Amino acid sequence: MDSKAFAEKAVEVCEDRKADDVLAFDVRKTSILTDYYVICSGNSDAHIRAIMSHLDKTFKELGIVIRNIEGIPISHWIVMDYYDVLIHIFHSETRKHYQIEQLLESSQLIYGNSHEPAD
Image (cartoon, rainbow, N blue to C red; front, side, top):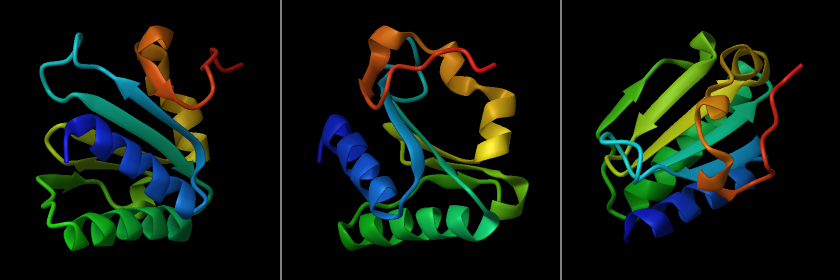
């Protein structure tokens, strides 16, 4: 599976678990770390855990091994590193605080609604 197809599958899995405000960005021209960012939100620690577990299970079934997971649901920010795709799972309030999608160009957005600065 190429990195774009992987990012698209990650979006699908997040949406399957009712993640909020799922966005995907193509960062190949601006990042040396990864090709795509997928960013989503959960509304509770249990919701974040469910999104993370579903991603992990789905990709293991496809034979894709995760490189690293940083954070735990109680931290309100999980980063799942699959080499070419980084998946950020935030608690909604934590995402509003850090606004990492504001660091990315709207032209890089490949899935989701255009992002605007939060109030």
